[in-house]
Length: 244
Image (cartoon, rainbow, N blue to C red; front, side, top):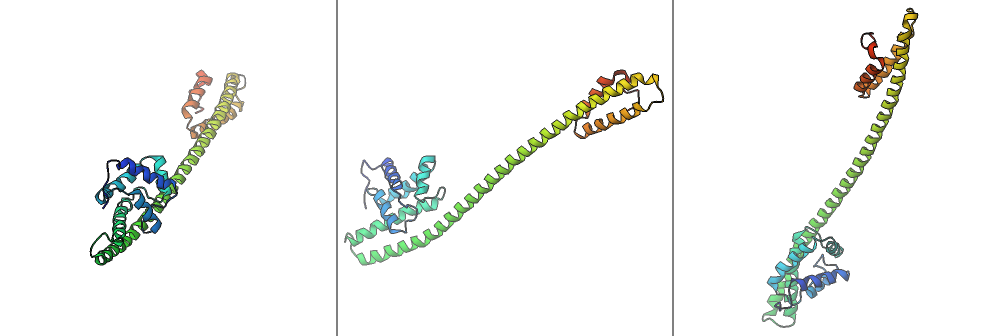
C-alpha cells in the first residue's frame, strides 16, 4: 500500500481536505462512488495505518474553528459524530485494495476480491446505522437549538413585560404619593382651622381621602414612603389625632 513520503504530513492532508470541501464535494457518505473517489484522492500517498488516525483527528481539529467547521458541514460531515469520521479510513483502505486487485497486483485475486467486496458490504451496513444515528442526532440538536431560541425569546419578552409592569407600578405610586401629599396638606389646613368650627365634618372627610391614598400606597409596596410623607406633612398632628 502507499507509503507517506517526507512531504506528506498532516498539513498536506488538511489542505487536500479543505480543497475538496471548497469544490463542493460530498464527503459524508463513503458508500457513494463519487465520495469514495474523492476521499481516495485526498488520501493518496498516505499508508493505511496513517489514515486510521489522520482522518478522524484532522476532522475533529477542523471542527474546532468556526470557518473550517462550516466548510466541513457543507461537505456533509457531522460535528461530534466520531463514528462517521472513523469509518472513512476503512472504506478508503478497502477501495484501494480493490483497485490494486483489479490491476493484478495480488495473487489469488478472486478470493481477495470476494473478501474485499464482503468487507465493503459490511462497512456499508455499519455506516447506514451510523448515518441514521448522525441524522437523528443532528435533528435532535436542531430541535434543542430551536427550543433554546424560543426560550430566550420568551425570557426577553417576559423581561420587557416585567419592566413595563414595574414602570406602570412606579408611575402609579408616584401619582398616589402626589395625591397623598395634596390630601395631607388639605387635612392639615382643616385641622389647623378646626377650633373655629368644632362641629365641622371636613376633617373626617379629608381623613378618609388620606387613608384611601395611604392604603393604595401600601398595596403598591410604598407604605414606608407614605408613612414618612404623612409624618412630615402633619407634623405635630400625627399620630395623636387618631386618623391612622
